[in-house]
Length: 200
Image 1 (cartoon, rainbow, N blue to C red):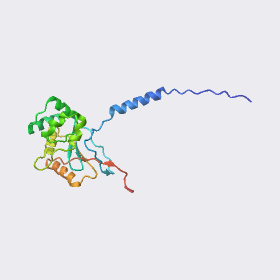
Image 2 (spheres, rainbow, N blue to C red):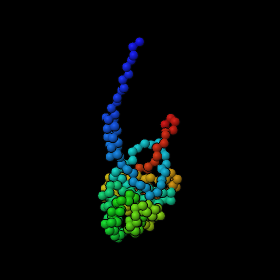
Image 3 (cartoon, rainbow, N blue to C red):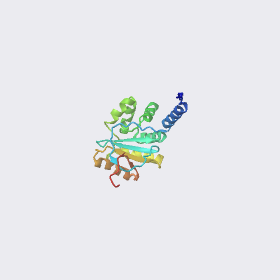
Image 4 (tube, helix red, strand yellow):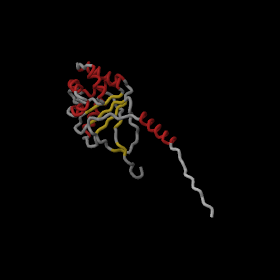
């Protein structure tokens, strides 16, 4: 009986590792990072799937107590809105504070407290913001002013609202009514995706 000679098979994995590295690099460079939020919010679930805008957007965050925090993207619009708000509320900010303002993704204090907040280290700012939120009551509605200033700079800015699933509805409705007052009637409510019910 003849003997079968076994040959070892060599597979060159160089091309495979090159493709893996290229794909990893591509995904890292094209991904957009979400800004860190000052409060932990668990959004309610819905079955609608719609891409939330991630550029040219005003992100409104509402916590369980109804405190409002705002993130403005891009940075140029954010800085210009800060200049307008500082002028209106007679708040003076130095260059170091303006730089700190751009590093902190969310706005979450009354204008008179903003310089003191920006003097804090970045890691302490979120804890300080949680105590206040942007005023949005009938006597001092700085929230409306922020949104108006941003929309004066760029009328194409989109608006998103994110609230915790346990936040009482009247607190969210109050923010929506504020937006209606300034004719900002189009906005996206951010939710998490859940499976559609049977037969949907």
